Length: 157
Image 1 (spheres, one colour):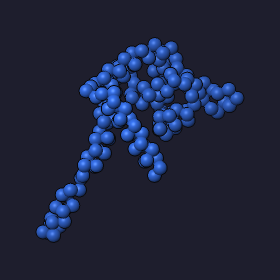
Image 2: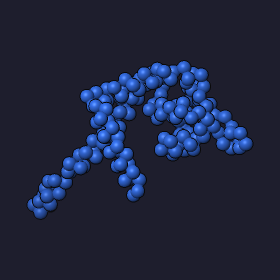
Image 3: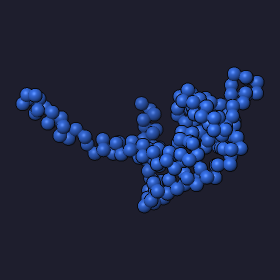
Image 4: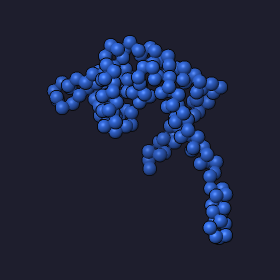
């Protein structure tokens, strides 16, 4: 390495990562850790966070199609299909043909899933309690509003 390269690298290195970068890295770190903690909390049910979120959307609107679920989860249809496959193996959901179009499948909860919903809610609440410890409702409201604005801004790109 030449002295000139060392100087250039030093100049690039100094100040390259700024406070905005560090904040963006922190924004990425929170969901990464949340997924890890959440996955550990619900592992005894044989579920991942994505599978839990799938069940949550089905609780809210049972009978959704795979495409509708993919849109809600912001995942590819194939990924949601694999998630539904896993939930079927656990006997938490079943696919049923849509009335009038046998090519479309609607997803329905099975009793086994309905039975564990209160326990899943309890686990989710415990994780959220840990995550929001020391954070006021006002702070949460501000963060939510700010993140919604940031999401809106990025969606315009």
